[in-house]
Length: 446
Image (cartoon, rainbow, N blue to C red):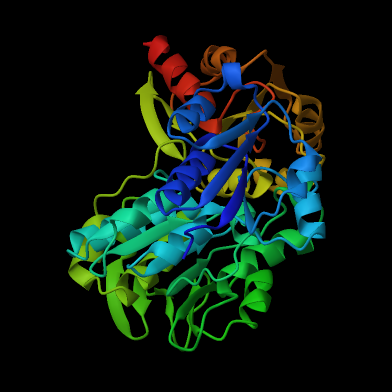
């Protein structure tokens, strides 16, 4: 399939390196181009040792004077990058490594996307299928690069894949047998330009599905429903707010698949209404992939959440600390605050400014008694806090300093919640690093 093909890979990191190694192994003539200079670039040096051509230190446009057959782009590199833009102008196919994974994989894919909840849903599906003995493999943003996982998969496996809008923009043939679209919210507008373009990228998860496939769709999200109208797949609806004629929904304090009860809500340990949506979608995907109700119920009775996603950390002198560092946008923080109902919350928030205001957060701040802010977006968040009537607002340098301040102004019974509503990149390399620092600071209180 790829033998003898001339391929340009733009951008390394995990996905670019994995794609380069795979294509080299399959006999392609691979050229790798990365921004970081070679002397600082261990990944590029490793590829060079394998005999792969490497060009580092910039993205020279004259590279595309060579006759490449297609381009593999690191998902994080925008299409406005001059080299990528020139490839598009030359009508070269520009894909991401998930397309390669699909092309070489013997196993069917379950693809999961949405603005929020992807990782929790992907993990739940994986755990449910594993509990049911269905031999799942997990891939994508959540862990191992998809094209690495695909090389080990066979027809007995399911590849459960978390997919970003960046990856889905670059698909051509990729076709998950089961596609899940959880929700659409303003996110990554700095990359996509408009909410419409972002939504369309997410909707690409349905693009190549046929009547033999399944599309799991959030009936409570109008944009998701509109995107699903274009899908030819069998549509399975889920709703956390209303009973459906067909699909998966809540009735009488239990989850039902059509008229079949799966589990009582009281038996589920994962907190929050937003997690209920994730649970409904995960049950639908797992059942379609052959998981039995007993296996699904066993997972839901024990699964306490994914690290950095409304993760319970510890209780210190009657204050419960929760790490929701993955909340990199307003919707995620809205959902985190909603999870605690009428409980008194001290919110730790702030980070990279994506250009938005925080007016949409104001209605969710009514049970927040104090807010501790850090990072670039702190002034905008303070304006929202003041409009919400929060009188106690503190500014600190970073997350580590926010924790003792939050503890000092709190009382026993309070929830201390890190849910930044912002990306981490102004101060931290990743949201994981931000969350780990929060966890460490909480343990230091003891």
